[in-house]
Length: 504
Figure 1 (tube, helix red, strand yellow):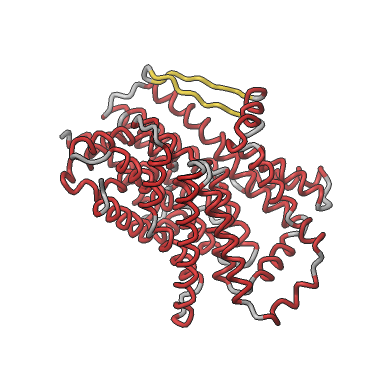
Figure 2: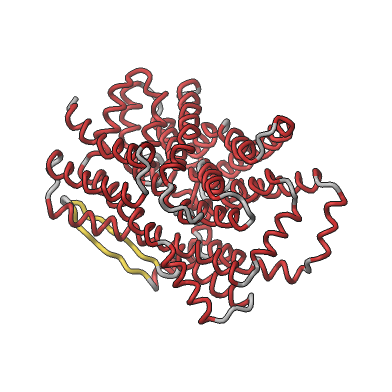
């Protein structure tokens, strides 16, 4: 084992955590400082050439812009349009009308609506939009960021219509997607109850509300488990997050109606159906565009991508890397169209909407530095071999207890790259190799990597940067990371126990 290589590969991880979590250096500066150190380590410790570093910076910057930064801008823009047209007040009424219970409001927005966004689009929409709406409803910024990050964990396993599972299936050469997907769902079973409970407990931690919170979490969790498992087995891995979230929304709304006293519904008469539909125009159109161009409608999506695509090819260390920009199906573009058309329907003028867009772009200046630095950093760590060194070190050090730590490797991948899919691509072959070495089932360990990566999303600096942007809390990334870290650790421990005790 090359201990020097392990130490050098660990340095960017620890440096980023120390800068953000302990020294409380703002996210943009922390990410930029860590990036500079990573470049030096890659060049001096891993023989990563100057030309490869330069190309990695270009490649990482392109990945940052398309689609992540574009989605962040447009997610904030969609919220700002609603504030400008004053329709956010109607949405506030709508959520209050469903229930005045804050736990129901928060769970509906984060676990329900956020999970739906993750299932269909991914790439930050499920953090940015729910967090922004919670702010509009009067919730505190740091709370809104934390619960949005927590809820954007479990659904990412099948986020963006099952791409993470498809990616790791390709990596390990596993053709039975339904079987692999069912193993992912099985490992997530306790977490589908624990995460909703944590969200409602953070919203209302009073002892009086504890029985209600436990019951609500159990009901929502059991429905999520059942629907996701059924979706995997009988429909396909593209649908679990989408259908599970829709089922959760239905259950939460029914629970709210049962739990709400009749007298509380008097406010319903003060808003017309037409007014409520108009207020939902922006988010309704966004969902319509996302569903209409999703892989669930593969042939139409393929047609749109074939007529408006810009592939950018780069060769780094002899390996061709491609960034493909699909202008008619890109999440940021769909958010933009929904926001503009919805804003026009709500009475705004096109010129006014463009002014709101410009203000939204200026609002996020620090975010551009943070996200770009983090993605370039993860790109350099990946292509120089640093991430593989870390994963292999964990696998070697844990020995027979490796199943307990298999999700931690997935978590590490998501922490560094901000993506469940990227973590699966990075460590899929490693997980399968270790499984064969210890007599385990490669698909079970591949599922463990996917599940661990969903936990890594909670504390991924990229996800945190999206959350702080949505809540206008740039500079407080370290504070959010410290609050989220204990939950991420609990998440990975639970996942590890599932892998260890129920392993194949």
